[in-house]
Length: 116
Length: 113
Image (cartoon, rainbow over all chains, first blue to last red; front, top):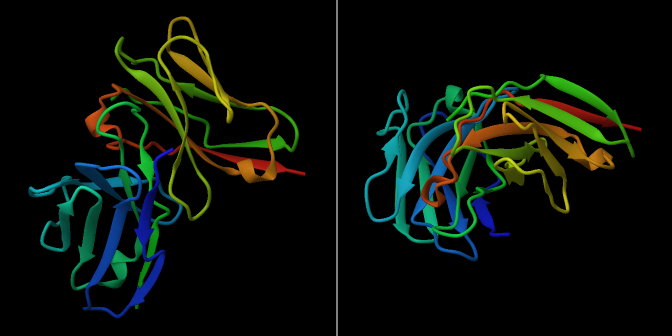
């Protein structure tokens, strides 16, 4: 199956700093990628849709100025958590799918963000 | 996307078949049933999907009732590595938005020795 890679897998940062998470489709091109957030013992919640060459689409309640998404190429989307606070500590997961053909989603391994 | 209902947790002995049920009584005619699982601290993994016929692959089997209002994911010989949260999702399989998924609470499967 297609491979989606996230980096870093784990990051600790201080309050007020910004953190960038990368999501790459390794063996296919993805015009659209998706970012999810998962708090402990909860399910995944969609945050935003990342569109190559255009602005991201954010779900209701997600601050676009806080969670900056850039999808500059067909294989890379980045999520930057700006001015991070402890309540932003969470498991962030990206996903992508083939633009045609298979209809299943491929997920990255996730990034554990801890803000101290 | 139609809503699904799954039991919150299940136990299964290693080597036995794990049968995970899912109710989706409001499923519409063009919606498929997808199953994903999430092993602790990892991203979700696709397992299988189907429309109305039973499906089987190297990971699992999917049994969909004739009225399509419920389905069962079967792991024929569960191992400890199958311990995970299993999500049943029903949706129209548009390739462009295949990754835009609404996750419910899923079923936490614990495989024991």
